[in-house]
Image: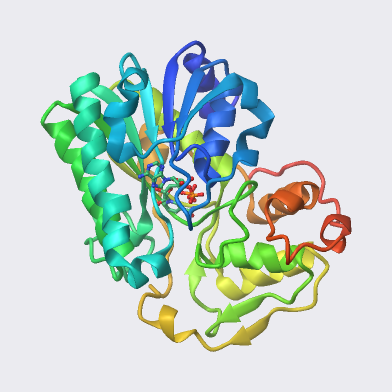
Length: 359
Ligand SMILES: NC(=O)c1ccc[n+]([C@@H]2O[C@H](COP(=O)([O-])OP(=O)(O)OC[C@H]3O[C@@H](n4cnc5c(N)ncnc54)[C@H](O)[C@@H]3O)[C@@H](O)[C@H]2O)c1
């Protein structure tokens, strides 16, 4: 008997599955896993400028996936792909909190309006279809207590959190109206292979990993004492698979956190050590990010553990090692041409041994 997600993945064999945002970081990892399991996967992605779409992300299964370049707001244009779907994994969205503050209307269009239009079309083409949405911990804002459970008040501190919350509520409302069978995962910071490292506005983990690859000292903003609980992308993918396979779940909304809670400074030190770099340097918070920092965060994942049997399996050190290994091999596809140098592909990452289960 393997982990719960290993047991359910075979249930997707021959199933018709749609993955929106499937050229991006998490969506492509999910699409590849489903294709390997024998699912009939269609990826829909409009390759939004400033988001993480990268055709190379699905190179490993290009022949086994169907790719439609379309905006989910125009779901009528791919209605046939929605009809007959067993599960729709809905990961299309804009992650960047900074982008949302620079252009709130763009964020509303991508994270709210497009979702509303998409769900309307799903309800029309495939009444009652199961839709698993990639929500975010950002909806909770500055935590009032730690770890944050699903009953925590929703008080987003940026437009991204507001618009992602609207989309979360759309999924839950359409569900209660019987139009779709919606489920939402509120993800903490996800990291791993296929992150869009060239984008500097997608969060601190991508920035740390890019600098590690470029052999530059990592930069920590503020004291570095803020807590985070990063989750490795394969574990996040397991959560989607379990949420999509559950027949009659007790809840429709689960927090998904990492295996441990670490200060950002320690996260930077672990990545620096894995890449054999000197210690991180500390800088004041850039003005643009000061107002939207949420301080410390850690997820309470009790609900998804008890209801769906999910728990993260990859300890942070191991996940970092696997991530750096991937990007060393594939760095040409993830760094801007002007940043790339041969050393990026030549660094020695110490071998940490086989994956160890998280404590
Ligand atoms: N990465 C994280 O740490 C994290 C944390 C919490 C929530 N999430 C959520 O998970 C989802 C995936 O995140 P990611 O890190 O893979 O981001 P990503 O930017 O790598 O991928 C998102 C993809 O969605 C596509 N997209 C955006 N709007 C679209 C639209 N209207 N129609 C079609 N395609 C569209 C983009 O082109 C991109 O390829 C997002 O919804 C994000 O909000 C991510």
